[in-house]
Image (tube, rainbow, N blue to C red; front, side, top):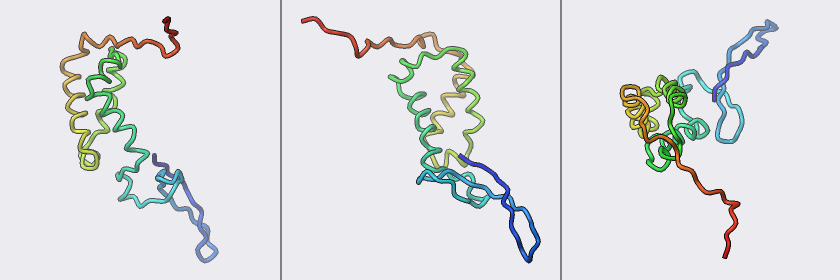
Length: 126
C-alpha cells in the first residue's frame, strides 16, 4: 500500500511543503520511501497477489470459486497491474497473466459452477 502526503518544513524560517511517499511496511507502520522504490513489493502487497495466483492456477481453488461473468470482469480488471516490474519480483504472476489472457479470449468455462462443501456443523448419527 502506498500513500502520498504533504509535509511542511521550515528552512531558514521559510515554510515550504514537500511531497513524501510512504509505504506500509512489514512492521505494520508507514515508512517514507524514495520514488524509485515505489514499485518494490512489501510482504503486505505480495500476499494478495499470491492469493490470486492460487485462486487462478490451483485446480481445487478454481473449482470451488465458481467463475461467472461478474467474477471474470473483476479478475480482468487486475490484468493491467501485472507488469514487468511486478513479475520480476513475483515470477509466479506470469502464470496469472497468461491465465487472464486466455480467459479474456476464451470466456468463462462451463464447469465454473462451484463445489458445495458440507457444513462443519452437520451432526453425525451413529
